[in-house]
Amino acid sequence: MRIKPRQHLLDIWQAIARHSFRDGQWTAGTWDGENSVADAEGLLCLLYPATEIGAFRLDDPDNTEEDVLQALRKAGGRLDLPAGVVDAAAEFMRTHTGDDKSPTFAGGYFCQVDDTAGEITEAQRRLGVVDSFSMSVTLCLATLGFLKGYEVKTRRDTVRETIAELREAARVRLTAAMVNLLRSFTVSVFDADSVQGRTLTDLLGGDRLSQRHALQRFQHRFGPLRATVTESLHLGIDVEEGLRDDDRFFEIGWAWSVVRDAPAVQLDEAVAARPYGVAETVVAQPDGVADPVPSLYFTVVALDGIQDLFSERTLTLGLLDAQQQQLAEALRLRWELTQQFWSGLARFDPDRWPLEDIPWQATGQRLESEYLSLSVAAILVHDLMRRRATDDDLVRAVGVMERLAERGRITSRMAHDDPMIRLHDPGVTVPLQGSERLGPPLHWRVNDFSAQLLKRTVQLRTLSRGSVAHDRLLRLAEDVFDHVWRRRIRDGEGLGLWDNVQAVHPGPATGVPAPSTSPPVSWSITERVVEAMVQAHHMYRQPPIRSTGVAVLAQALLSEAAQLLGAEQMEPAPRDDGKRGLQLRSIEAKLGRARGLLDAQPGTACALALDVLGQLDALARAREAADRGA
Image (tube, rainbow, N blue to C red; front, side, top):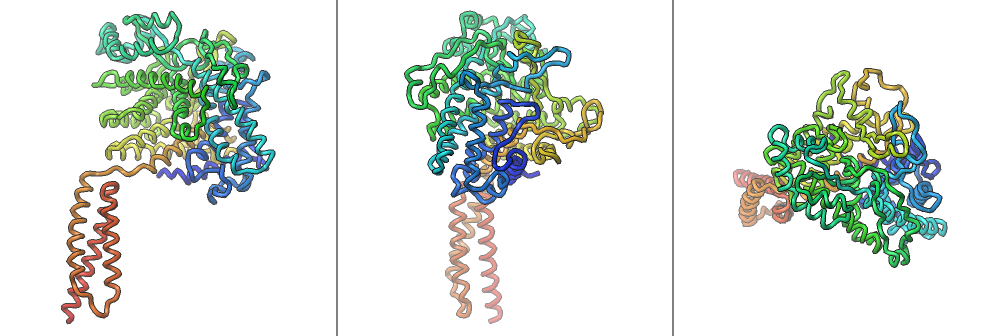
């Protein structure tokens, strides 16, 4: 199935308008109560394309495209749509704000317990999670950018009042999310002979490296990074002393929530007193409970959100105030260090990448899964986008993506009672280490493997400039998209949204027939698909790959065409043929366009040159026929 981002986004928006709007009011709820993560994802399904793609803009009613209006007609008319988006975002901010006026970031039903573990406590329900922190960064930036465009277009007093309220709430929430992301970053240091150390040794070299040899190579590979982490980040005396010990391994990244004993982030009171500044009293910094152990899933989630802080759009529109710019710089340092670490770990052995040994093992959580391999691959994609990737890196990364698609039964057939279906339904269980201090142990379940694979494949294809890897990634992206698209809900309130795993798989691993009732809407998977479509839009906006061989051929064809055109222009025009002069001028113009496209689009130039040669040959044959007749 060919990826057509514009049409697919319009289809998704039409489904969202049908599901989530009643009389022009946003009513998107979740199947099990309020949830700051799912609520943010639902809003981003609208705001992300509307702020990232010019043709999907909603903040300028006079220039909203007709097909966009048609897709969202159930959400309101041309003037009502942007006002409805403002009302929906403002309601989100009110809903997820505590009694102390500080934003809340609870994970809601994503935080689960085993059936025999007991009930989730109220304290656990209030715990902020990295998924919500990261989503809030993206949502707040999209909201602030939307308001910048819309506030100069509306004259409604009530709407302008809501805009002022929403702008302040978005700034407060953005600062709070950034603060919490800083406090959720952690470094884990462990001995080589610990369970974590043995797992990491196996991961890095398997049977090929002894523990001592693996530790030596680890120190050689990450020695400079270890020094940077120690000198640049304030991590506490115990961690800093552990990092200085070369006989110990370490990992860096984000835990699932604010880390236990994480120090408060000092905010600049002078900055906070300025207009749109955020007072320290409304950015609550509660004690953390998470164990200081990086989680691969939450690390990837954090990286995705943080990169929006220094995107071209954020910088161009000036969406960050002075305080937020300071926080963004601190997060950017952690973002870069984390990418360097996990990308280096993924490619630790140049002969055989640990990432190529699927599935990946999480050292701190005793967990291995294809989903973790995809998480490491996602960080590698981030890193390849940040630096100049080599052709070898790209080709090997493509191979990893293709194997993950096959192992995940996306491009291969799933057998009856295949255990791999658990990767999609119910998903991978990520333990929330440290949550047991406030009640029963919690876990987080993720089932968006297919949507994440689609997103990372499109990102990698955007990066690739080699024709072989480019074509392989396009075929893979189309195969994965075909799988994902067929998993849309086919009836009920969620019609056209996600997720219906049974639409592409024979049923749960137990062999029980698929339920007859319509499944609940998964905003997580829907939002990932929307992100992938936005990435696909950017992918198609790139110039095509220039083939040197085609360019040489096009140059030769253009040279021949120019020579023949010159010769044809020397021939006398027949008296009864007034069209010949027009044909020659048309051919000359087409030849000029072909020359202009030679460097950027040699294939197009080649096609134009062939067309010119055909027309010139037709003129020559017509003249020869006329000469014979005479």
